[in-house]
Length: 48
Image 1 (cartoon, rainbow, N blue to C red):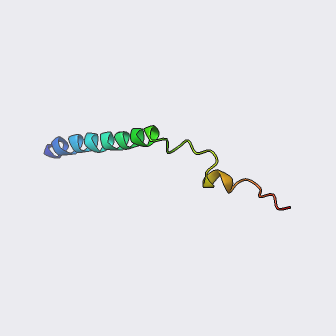
Image 2 (cartoon, one colour; image 1 turned 180 degrees about the vertical axis):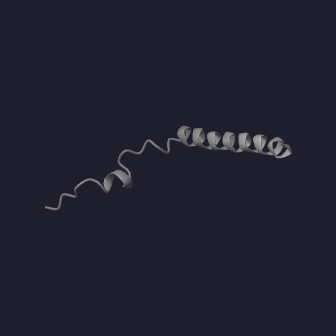
Image 3 (tube, rainbow, N blue to C red; image 1 turned 120 degrees about the vertical axis):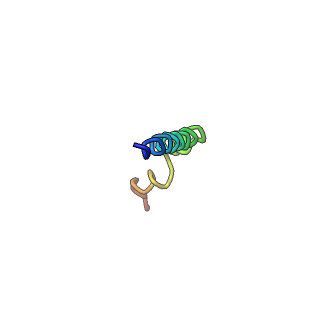
C-alpha cells in the first residue's frame, strides 16, 4: 500500500509531462508539413 503513495504521483507527473510534450509539438507546427518527405515518398516522380 505504501508503494501506491509513490507510484500514483509519479505516474501523474509522467502523464502530465507526456501531455505537455504533445501540446508543445502541436503548437510548434510539427504536424503541418503536408508536402514533407513522408508525403513525397508516396507520390509518383514524373520523369519525362
